[in-house]
Length: 142
Image (cartoon, rainbow, N blue to C red; front, side, top):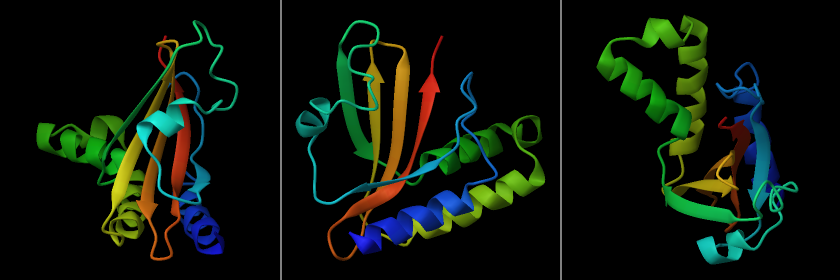
């Protein structure tokens, strides 16, 4: 567990100058799960009080990930419009955080959608001692 807390704190620290690009402008916060998980297990969790909002329905999707923010950056690089979305120092920050994340072979993106509006996005990597750790951010699609 200590290993997970340290990794999550390092990753959140690397991302501290960035926020989720949405109405919420939320930061990336450390996140640790002490053991393996399934989407079904995660679907029963009261995610920061999201379960009752607004319809009480929660969907959890777990997919492979090479660090969601870096994947978005790569899409903008392919489109040739990076400068429209990122300052040069933001690109460096994302790349540094991605390097930390990619050091672990098992990586997942957990997307929690509550009532079709709020999205909790969690990038997790499995650490050598078995914990899953990474960063989470909240995005509200309006």
